[in-house]
Amino acid sequence: MRILACLTAALLGAALTLPNPRQAAAGDDPNWQACVGLTTAPGDRVTACNAVIDGKTETGKRLAGAYCNRGHGLTEKRELDAALADLNEAIKLDPAYACAYSNRGRVYAFKRDLDHAMADYDEAIRIDPTFALAYNNRGDAWATKGDLDRALADFSLAIKYNPQLATAYGNRGFAYFRKRDAAHAIADYTTEIKLEPNVLAYINRGNVYRDINQLDRAAADYGEAAKIAPTDARGWRNRGLIRLYQDDIKGGIADYDKALQYDPNDAYSWSNRGLGKMQLGDKKGAAADFRKALELRPDLKTAQEALERLGAAR
Image 1 (cartoon, rainbow, N blue to C red):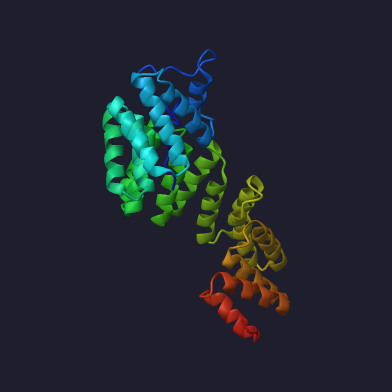
Image 2 (image 1 turned 90 degrees about the vertical axis):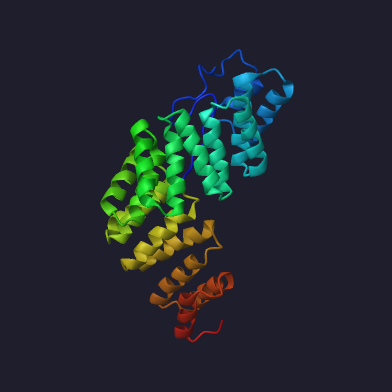
């Protein structure tokens, strides 16, 4: 699942929590523009917000926004203790800043401190009861705790308050999938894909189709994932598995060739390609693949048993 952050100048799917926030404008200092800009890379955001904070030109809510946005950049860089300090300062400067609470909750979630994360999401929602991102993030925490019904309720509230929040559909779809509700999971992933096509959404929907034995649809979704991100091994290896299931052995091997090109450390891909080669009678190639799989994961039974069947030594 995915937990989202919000920025001062514009939020991803929730009403802005700063009263009448000032958007970055052409006349603004370039450092301020980069600090609050939605497209600024995390490292550049930290650098720009450093300049704003160190320059001591901002006070009050704008200074709180600079700390919050620097905290966001540090979170994306997974410098979590530094991010937590910045978000604490943002909240100290503006205790009614819902976005800062949600972002701090996100840091706690990354630190696996779910109780503190949920307390912050609760506070963000108390301040702004229509804060879609906070509902989404609290839903993620509930799902991590294993309470899928509460997770579903929060994801549904996130969607209620922002029907365009693609990630909330994906998260709710995954919760439905975990509850073995394939129809609702597919519906949510389909909506996510319409709103924001992405690799994970196609792979997740493909996984549902695979589980209910709609293999052609699963293969099509994995193929879309590979088309969107051709250097991401996940689409290739998932489609490769389906092709092996469907006895398209050459197609499966071709997909695993691609998967291993982009992720040579996946033992399962080596083992599965070995199974394909074994079916085609390529015993030497199969044995080499199984040995590589066991080099990466010595306890992989599939590869161990296949080598034994081939009569080959490890």
